[in-house]
Image (cartoon, rainbow, N blue to C red; front, side, top):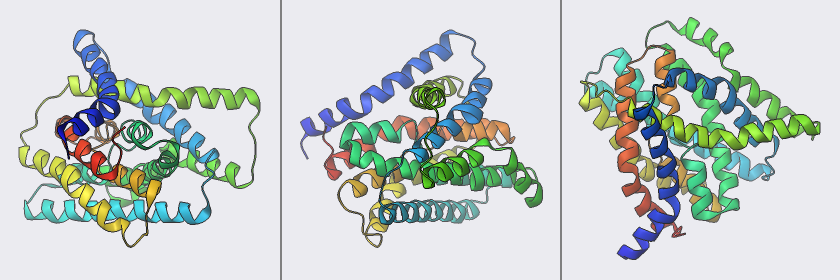
Length: 307
């Protein structure tokens, strides 16, 4: 593994993403921006539209779809289990444990993972990575919301809170229209595509704005645990689970990269919305995002994505 390979992989695949994120960081430092309001726009408008659009235009064979969905669910379940075991051993309180569970369970597979896979491996891998992202989004907006809610409420109210999450309805509608081969009227199609195309840049800018507001939490053990599990255990879990699921080629490349992403910026939105420790979650996202170019560059070279 030559240094030139690592440098080219970083410059071609990671630097464009980090540059846009850095623009959001500088914007957050220079101007007074309400990141929670911006996050709500992403949570309630752009994420549902992006998920709906990806589901509507997904043309992967059923076997590939089931394989990637099963792999995604298994990766998230394994990561959440690891986080729970370590969190219990470290005696975290309930809100801290819930924050660790969502940040370890849900990586940045949308605004970071999708452009990275596209740059590194192309359209075939992106199809699988998109399905990984959609599956993650479904689980994030159901299981993730449930976990976040349990930080301060009971199980019944947490379940009822899922009815207020628009991505749940976007998944149902997108899958139904895809199944029945329904085409949208051109004005609606263009509206959906326009919003979907803008969602990833907006998410990257939001990530930068959120990081500019970082206030380090006292829970440094929780920050280190969560970031470490995502960046180190994530790739190992992905590579190991790829074997029983029989992932090869583009599916192997796209899905393993997605399992290795740092914690998602949407975790900070979820933390604010459901009154978890926002500074803790932001610290986890910041540290993981800061260190991720190291682990992801090495992984990209291993997977053959020198770009």
